[in-house]
Image (cartoon, rainbow, N blue to C red; front, top):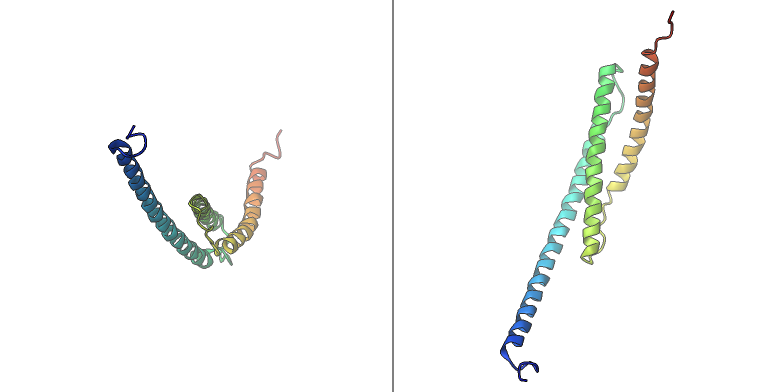
Length: 146
């Protein structure tokens, strides 16, 4: 009966092992929280760098409206769109991870204005892309057949 009341060896050893294991888990959670905080900071820095790159390289006045330069602009815009999608995905994952650890939701303050500017610019260029696609389709149509 001594073992059932906690006066014996195996149960006490198990209890001590469980407490030690819980302490290890708590330490690991704290280490992971620190890693999450560091990732939030690095993501905010990446957003800021992306915004600066976007501001420097976004299409403004086109000196040459040749087909080749327009295609290069479309390719550049697609790269920016992909880069922003990666940043958005990473920020959403970090927000979810912080929520899972009971931390306050991280703030990515530069993301919303960047998204607005990207969407505004993309919508204008998408209109040109759609026009160019339709024009190419009409240009390849055989209008006079006998």
